[in-house]
Image (tube, rainbow, N blue to C red):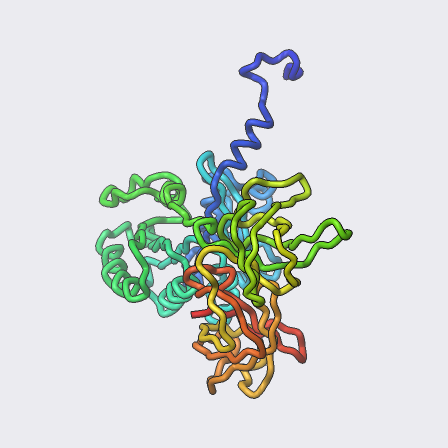
Length: 412
């Protein structure tokens, strides 16, 4: 029988406030897996969730086979259609935590025809796990996924050479992957990729170090993920796209939005775009009261010293000024089943701003294609290059006739 809380000693009582404070203080790592079909992405994630105790008992029960063995792939292949086909066609997200860190993990498709899904899953990731099947070696799709991940601004890479158990953990196979893949990653600008031999099915080098590969002295996957230092958006210049002007009465005028990057305090000078007028922040207003400091990704309302005509689609900035242009160079991933038509007018949605746009260069892009384009805009766009700010450097193109998302783009 369990004693009621009032009869427990002080050390035995669970301090919920301390627990919540501890959870809130943990930083977050967003990661995405990618690789060719049947490289074992879903199995790896399932094993990682299981061994890191990130899966619930009812989830484990639902994926346990008749012989009692857990099918780890089914922990992430949650859609019935995917189970019936035996493939992953969409992005499956999972959330788990360890005593050191919180994680959001995206399992992305391996098929060439689902490149757009892979790009979606990797677009917010800090780290990419590129799986390579040790029995097959490098594939064109492995290189393609590494290229997309680098294009999307991911700075940390793990090259997981999986299924080492099927080749009797031969060290030379692992080194062969390293020798052929490392120069390619160098050409993409990837700095210090982490190569890791593993068996997701058996759990070797996933959470625990493998006793079957004594020749590998590196950390297992989870330990490496816990050690990665993630660059936080608060280190970039302040940007806040305006969602709406807040004017409940004549005594209050504020501008609401989610901070995309940087830090702001009362008294800081601020630039309003596109007007170019400057003012100073007087208050940072939230539902729970005023703040003395605010940072990304908080949603706040700012009041200014001066009355400036500001509305939805404008941007408040501080520090290094954003770039402004009516023509941009960008790389796009084409999402739509209808190919790109340079004679067609699209809508470009960038943060809270929507602008009429045309692709100014003659190029052919079909669904899942990736290409460089020049886009002419009906009015000036204020932005940062994608490599320095993912939020203000990205956009989507919308087909005006169907309202479908035609493409996602990254501004060069």
